[in-house]
Image (cartoon, rainbow, N blue to C red; front, side):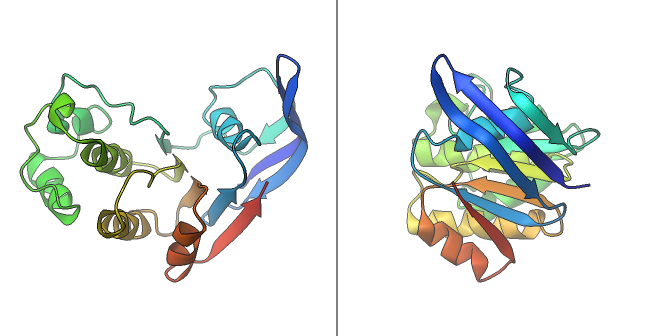
Length: 193
């Protein structure tokens, strides 16, 4: 079942960020949400994740989904190791597979490092790997590739393409180049807000 927004309106105090918003995020497909800051992209994400409840209208198709997410901030536990951060979301993933995936992202030697010791770009890649390491049918990513140089961005995008293949993938971004790159490898429906 697709995720369907029906006449969704959301206000913060007097500011209306969504007004009678209607859209269908197709199941098993990739949707790419673009638009200016403050237009409601992150609010859409927060509604889908159940973090915003105070809105009017309906959102259908969220029941029973296994959702994984990458937030704008990395939302990692700074005092835990990279390994433990990933194990927080999946107790079935083993250290060898985490090391293998970290290597694909150019992070060979950090599995036992505490997150607080990592650079911003390293934290970003760990946050994305953590989201990809859990069992999911829907992956929601809010500005996932920000702060990554081109080489690392491509490594991460390749892993996202591989692990989210055939699943519902919703990406929020300001970056048209990210859309163009991903479109080479997957069918994407673009939503300009």
